[in-house]
Image (cartoon, rainbow, N blue to C red):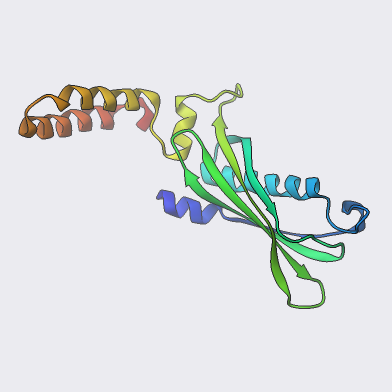
Length: 176
């Protein structure tokens, strides 16, 4: 499955009803409750993408565009929007719907960053592969090859780089 297919397959949608026990004295959803729901949806989307253990390492700017009153239905949508070598970013949007009408509007949007961890709750080169990134030995090898071949003849450089990189790349433990 390609990265694009994994991103598409990991999109997560959850619907919730806003009840009075989750609202503040203004009869609107607590901001902290909204952030908790967003982190949960982001976690599910990240896990569905990586199929590894993941943890939240940061939440970026969260925009509260509209308040969410009690008695509404909210839809949370989590989408992987960036995949790096060691982390991924998940965008979460919350839409509100009135229970007895078809009105729908975006209320909150924010981004959450995740990293994969191993069974010891540590990141390592094997967890990096979860995001389709390169493990540390491969990154080191590429930088070494680039440095060596930068000063060599152009034709020889292209030939050697292709054959040496393919030999190393196809037989590296990260590919197993």
